[in-house]
Structures are given as structure tokens and as C-alpha cells.
Length: 246
Ligand code: SF4
Ligand code: SF4
Ligand code: FES
Image (cartoon, rainbow, N blue to C red; front, top):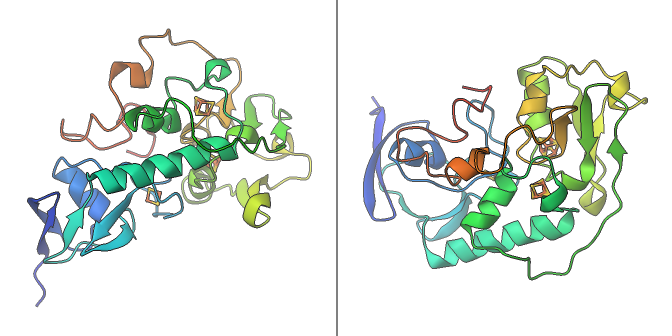
């Protein structure tokens, strides 16, 4: 019979994990933070953003989807991988239209917090300045696609948790964008401002109207502690108080 426990090494630290866990989950349980953006605890992994890329026995893998196994040697916090993640984050920042100083999500935004963690002051790539639609048709929720990173959290939560299937991806390649299941836009869907799908967006793409800038600078989520600091302090990411998925 197969043993339920596996032992592997991450950043030279030996870690015991439950068979079936992903590297990201097992690392987090052992107090090792692996940056992530599309991953959200409690949801089926999406594996799309690649921010969680690690080397497993020398090969690049997404830590949020790769299962633990005995004798894996995982590199995570290396200069090479920090540089790779920095590049990915910079690409995400120039692919969309991000103006943090005017954004309601500033201070609560995981993309911004990851950029700070990776010492990104300004992306080195040229901005693409795409034209993207803003959908303000819902009375209580704003959808600003300019900030969407296509992480799929809202898609999975609306489908698997809210049971509504409000969101889905439309188009391919550079034209891929977030769609809603109503021709009249978000206002024609059965989305409610209380739906969990609205709360899980890591960036300022899905926002509850009339709630902007309520938390003063200095007290916002990532003012209190940098992203990832909670791992190793006994909890995973996102913080339990902030995530409806706990
Ligand atoms: S979504 Fe995040 S990165 Fe984008 S403008 Fe807002 S705070 Fe900045
Ligand atoms: S709206 Fe937010 S949660 Fe949904 S795909 Fe875009 S970035 Fe992700
Ligand atoms: S967090 Fe693993 S691919 Fe996005």
C-alpha cells in the first residue's frame, strides 16, 4: 500500500507533505512562500499565470498544479526564478492599463503587491495600451477590463461556489478577454454584489461600487504586511479575513 506521506526538498529544506498536495500547498504548509496570482486556496488550480514557476528536478513547472512526490528537489527562491517572475509581472503590467495611483484596488491589489515584492518600480517593457471595455451596467458592481489579468478566479468561483456561471473567457491570444453571460452586460446577468466571485479578483477589475477608498493609506491590506508575509506566520494566502474561500 502507498504511504500517504511524501518527503521532498524545497530551497534546501526537507519537507513532509500529504500525497495529493501540490508543491505550492505543501510548501505553504511548511512556511515556504511561492508567489502566485491565479491560484486561490479552495479552488481548482488554473495554472495560467505562471507566477508560481519553480524548478522541479531541474525543469520548470507550475507549483500550483504539480503534485508532490518523494525525492523531488524544488528550487523556488533563487535569483533566476525571482528574475523570471519579475519578467512575468512586468509583462502583465504592460499588457493591461494599470494606473495604480488612481485605482481603487491600490494597497489591496495582489499584482501591485507582487510587483513591490519583486522590486518593480516601472516595467522595462513598452506599454501596449490596449483598448478594453469597461462595463458599468450593473447597479452595484463595476467590471473594468483594463486591469484584468485573466486569472480565472471569478470564472471558477462563479461556477463552482456561487453556482451562477456569470463569467467566462472569450476570444483567443491577444483578443482573449472576460465575457459575461448576458448580452446586456453585467447588468443583465444575475450577478449580485454579495457573490463571492466579486470578492476574489486579485486586481481592480471587479469592484463593488460605492466602496472605493474606504480604507486609509497605511491601513490597506498590503500596507499592513507585504504579500507572502503571512506564509510562515502560520497561515496561507490570501489571508483568512480577506478570502471568502477559507
Ligand atoms: S489593478 Fe493593481 S496593478 Fe492594476 S492599477 Fe490597480 S492597483 Fe495597480
Ligand atoms: S476579473 Fe479579476 S478575477 Fe476575473 S479573470 Fe479578471 S483579474 Fe481574474
Ligand atoms: S499561481 Fe500557479 S500558474 Fe498561477
